[in-house]
Image (cartoon, rainbow, N blue to C red):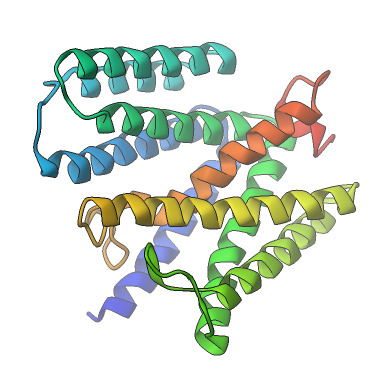
Length: 272
């Protein structure tokens, strides 16, 4: 089987599973986010620990398990955020006391914030469902449009020292594609405030591309081409969700700011 065939089959399976658990929401989606959290931390430490240096034993892994249990149990978002911060501080302090690098702490923060923002953006209500579908539409369209526009137009590189394959034309095409897809989803869902949602889609598209570049920078720093080989034809989980988790955190914050009196962050943008 060719690499392209593997990529296509893996993409279809991943999309089907993701949309199925997204539709269910609640515990199934939190379990899905817990798997993403564990995979991100595994891949992060797999890359960063290959450089050697002092180790922290199984402490970081144990703390990730604590967070995952709290996430699955449905601990309130604020308490879960405080827990993630406390666990990160513990790893920072222990790493400093042992003269170790801070990569485990940064990986713990990255993984836990990723799982938290995805899980609690969706939660279990209709607004959360529309918000997460809006996120998927923007991020997936950004990736697809950036790839095809970049290949068709070419031109100056976006960040050659980080990701030589990305172009400025691809980044612009991705942003346009993300905004169009986000607005189409919003219109289909019957949402209002289309101008605001267009601006939000633009922000999410930009943030998702920054998240992609961030993960590429981490891989380049540690001399890795892919974060792992967990997904046939695609590399690792981080390679697939780098832009998504960055954009999900951004959307969660935007929703939280706009929903001062609502029960759920997504209701500030999608008040159904």
